Image (tube, rainbow, N blue to C red; front, top):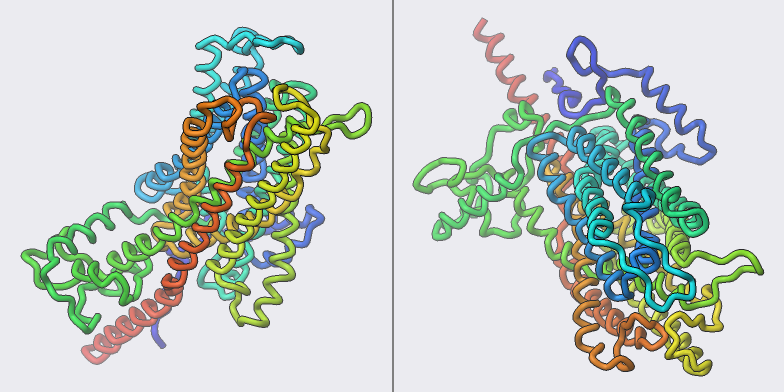
Length: 612
């Protein structure tokens, strides 16, 4: 019988004992009670290591902290720092861009130097520091901007120090997010054993329920926290999520010995650079027809290093030159193994899809800026005493997404499975494509709604009154918020799963960072569009598309522009997704490698027996 090569050296749920990592079944029982105490059907994960419970708890509180700031930030900037509509919207999207771009740095550090766990832990501390400074900035009288009288025409401006500290805190928080965002979901996904067929299938649902947990925290922020900020004060509204974030980090650290850890495997950017340089150096060399003639390491080498080999593919053939023998030397910058070449191919193949995700991320930026600002110019009273904070409108995005995720996971996936035979129901790209089509519909609905609002404003003669409220209920905005949640259930969940699943196994933190970076680029595109459109159309006060006075704006033209850009993006996505080839499951390749190594070892044992 061939010797068995244990996968535990690659993927295990460890605890510390005498300086070694060993399994602990008692801890699994302890963490399993975490889900048993929740009245929610999570039986899909009943046989999966429950160590991701504490990881999920952190995500709930982190999303509550982030969206407790982001969802109402444009209101704070206009009402407290007294910024204009365009300036505040641009500042929000620039900050959002930084929030979602910095994960590239965090992913690089995690995959190259510190590993996912330590990168997450250190940057979480920076995140909390930013939250503490931000809470102080809105609480301490000397740091807080002066209040504006209710009937004042011109409000006193905040001092340079006050503005500086507030934005310094925001960007410290953005830096902290850079190390937490690409690693926390990856740590959670790492808790599923790719070698266990049941856990592998359950992992398909993991991203749905991960996003469900994240958006549960978002919902708390967009309802409870925003209400506190509007009616009690921003000091309490920021202090609550700061305390929650600290508690959740403590819970995460308490589970440290029991997580499944994947070891870091060198510098992924360095490996990709070597492949590109080697292929460029040997651009004249002809690639052999037989892929077996390409340079590759022995299977046992990958087992010893705890890495997965990747089978050769026929796409991007130019890069195969890096693995073609016959150059001037056999250095790492001149001859690369097939697996390194295939890693580079996988990352390059994802780039067109990555670009196609910029526009839906630009749509998300509208939710916390222009969509919310629209709500400030509509009737928000429910009864004689209660007034809906405009930032709470974003909660309908979250509620819609939560419902859509449950329906998708529990109903649509089962239905699609019967039709397609795919364990996911439909492919990841098909799921994302449905969401992109919904984005076009969203902007069409937003256009129609804004045309109606402006029509009523004109009828009432309110165009010249910046603070005038149109005699329309704020609930006319609900369709665009609800549809945004449905779209997110398709696009955002699919996007997270795509970039994690399709990235090479040794670069999954970078894959998750690509997911986050699309949101960052989307925010910067939104900021660019706002600035450009304002400069071009705002030369005349009454002709501008986006003015500080929304009642005099022509915002519906801007929404029409976004609808057209989304439609063009759908066409681009259909073209690039049509030619995309999914990667082979890494564990399938590894199983073949394990068998190969087992046969090699068996042959050596047989030779030794014959020799003896």
